[in-house]
Image (tube, rainbow, N blue to C red; front, side, top):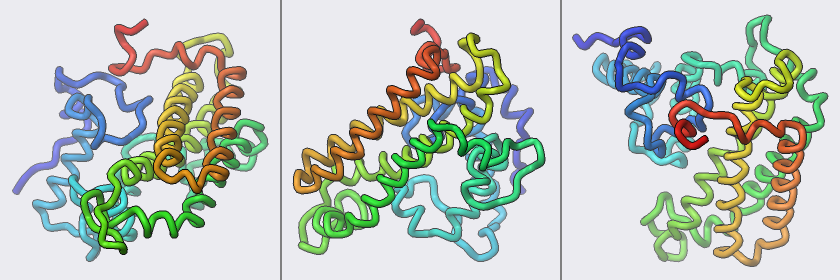
Amino acid sequence: MKEKKNKMEIASDQVLIPGIDNYCNRWCERCLFASRCANYRLRKEVIDYTATEKDDFSGGALPGPNLTLFELINQEESFWQFMDLMMKEDDSYMEISKLKGCECPDDVVDFEDVMDHELCRKAVYCYDLMIDWSIRSGKYQCAFLGGNSGDENDNGLEADPIIVNALEVIEWNKSLLLSKVFRAMSAEDSEHLYAVERDANGSMKVAMLAIDDLFDAWCDLLLEIPEAENEIFDILHYLSLLKEEINAKFPLASCFVRPGFDEGME
């Protein structure tokens, strides 16, 4: 029987970069440092161990490591069971539990209090714009997408890989942006305002990087689907405003050094 390693055994590996998972975008499949991340190694151990023990999450298939984001979401029940298990291993559980309507420990900042912050409301507005576009964009997705990149769409044409990638980036980063802004604002009042290496700055740096990725992805969609330019321009406009306001309120966030990603770049 295969034994599952614990956190301390994985963390003792000298190849790992300490704290790299604290300020990343959690998209392990696209991370160049995944093999040096304790959090990723722990998740992989859980997947390998669970597969070996034939534990299928009460009947739901365990999401495989090579599935695309869209494939995972199509396996909705097993996907969320898997994510619940993974998020409880780190502070992402704290960040989005309130968004999912789950109960949190008493020391977690109240969701309604955080929503009083103007930045949080504007982040939610950007998120809602992107959600609304996704709901209304069925005609575009039917025209340009198959099940995955390389599949055929309803017109018998190969799915456009640029659009597939852009939508995956948007799907991933829109929630990341929201959770990191909420995290930063929940910590903002309890930290020294002028300390560069404070958690709020780190979270806001990740939020701004998410905005950059979202901006690029929406620009890719604009080039591929020019008939959607009015809606896309609105989204780009409000993402730009949000980033400007983050920079104004957190001027030191861009100077935050994320372990592994920014070290040696100061």
